[in-house]
Image (cartoon, rainbow, N blue to C red; front, side, top):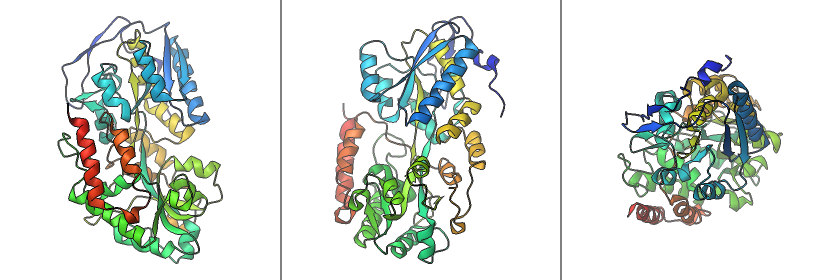
Length: 422
């Protein structure tokens, strides 16, 4: 691994610069960077997943500060969205912060987010689905921090006991395997009751959240209705349950406690299995393709946001360049398990964390299944107010056997469309 070069950190002019912020295609918006490159103090607000991530952020901030003669105060917010919103409302936002998908559109429309994407690195250096998540009106506002995708986790011991050999690659095989694995008080497949898991099946069936132009929602499409109907049929057969139905807080808990032979979770499950359920022998494989052979999954991400009214945007851009650099992304991935947002770095990380096929019984999961999904993953909805709409949908998916797929998705469509009205 090459060390990050100090001259790369300091490549911005020390004087106030007039630069062009270009999105995936060129934008004419000029960005005026403010403040000095050296001798400044930045505030950096994070929403950490735990001690490992907090320590990694602090270490990166200290390393950049030492190389540039700056200081970074890291703030680990206990209630990130509330604290960030209050900071902007009070006129003193952090210079750099985690840009969450659910807040992105609001930050842009309020003029609070510096369009710094291509000032940090070219959009082509990152997965297209992640760039799309943080692009608004053709402007690439902030570079993706990392990514997490969904994959299928399989309990190897249950798998062998049921006489199964190859992991499922189609919906028909997934349903058949879930049926074979549902035995002795164990449910074949358990998932969390949320659009953040169910939506993967939309993508696998050629469906989506938005129309092709991104101008309206497409929740009630025939592809999505059919996908939800597939899940309903599995639930009616008793081979698919949601985590509350097996007294678990999420799919990973059901899987770790032996109540589920399979679950669908993101790469965050690796840390949970290592720390809480180390005795479970499991493997990770890509989600099976839908009836037309289409692969799909969901991607979850944050970006490195820079406050538009920061007095030190020149130094902030330099700091984010360091955070988003290939070497530092690899350090973050190794420190707390997130996947790099740069394809080249993600593949490098996956190559050093590869397990073996499911039949081998190897307890080290093959993270390449998660990395593979980044190439075709469907991003989250960034429309202002959508978390409330999604919560209403999620509240009705605890018992998938009892739902009316067409009616439920039409309700979701109607509620989501209301967000687009003036």
